Image (tube, rainbow, N blue to C red):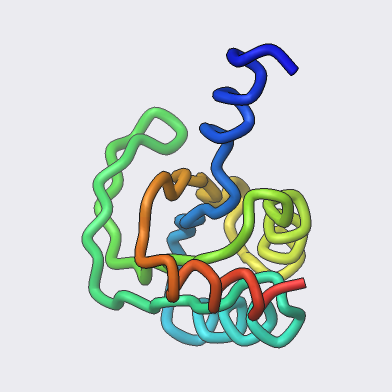
Length: 116
């Protein structure tokens, strides 16, 4: 196998942090429990009292939201997205992923073992 193909495979990340803002703690907790319960996420951190400033329908809005930090495998992103969208009340909900390129090997192994 060519060296560049081997290097590209090594660079591919297996894990992600998916970010999602929710309107309140109730929605955030419901989504977090479903993701962990369905083994789509190993862990979800719920961070309350996040101030969001954004443009919506040509107006600048300021809202308090609750942010979810969802730790999972990259291969589960589509299922995570579908799960969130089935619960989330926003017309357009934020669901974005950040690849995890490095981490504590023991933690990453636990993450891998905790999801499907």
